[in-house]
Image (cartoon, rainbow, N blue to C red; front, side, top):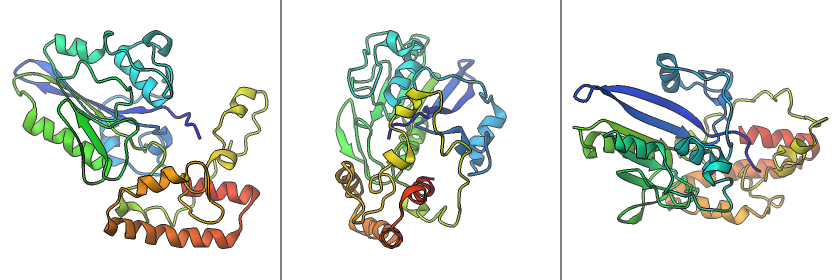
Length: 303
């Protein structure tokens, strides 16, 4: 199911670099992160106090328009300041980002900044304009993810969001040239599909029932193109890959991909994961849900 939700900039933090009298930049980008899941914009479903603090001390965009809502193309727009048809990277399935063109990090380098990129890249070509980069191949994985940089490729142990954050902090504290202003780009994979949480949060919302959006059963009247997209929870969200229910009802074309993702867990963590989802899968199987009941079940699991 394709996501219409744009990756958003979670924070842009200017910190005064006294020696240079220029601002340092930390640019934090999350993936497919809806505004309804930032309590600075909508506090009904979740509380995000640290991001709210950034918003309170900075600027909130409430009338912002996306140049391209897809993962890689949105990054290309951000880096170049150009629409997709101008920067040449229009979708995730085909093409390679042309790193020879002018980009924001190159301009920052020219202005004397030290630049670094950590996390998701998803532009196929090797990053340019960064003095340091340590990135995921393609989409990356949430559990024990692969990374690569200019010197090597390796597996990082742990949960991806924590790993990216720790790498960013380590570069700030230990690796950067403190005589220069810096621009650090921290690109998270979360909240991108397949929505695998850190294990300690598996139970976080099990007792919560989320309100259905007003347009949940939209008939797309007068909007034929929107109705043809593969984005309907009832039709396009899978039971196994998306909802994590492994049962006789599952068996989508993405099932093997899901099993490969959770197969990256070590035996202890896999046991914790399976213990949680096995009971949910068994309960789901007994209920024999169909129609709207199944669609609403998928929505609650997704949330």
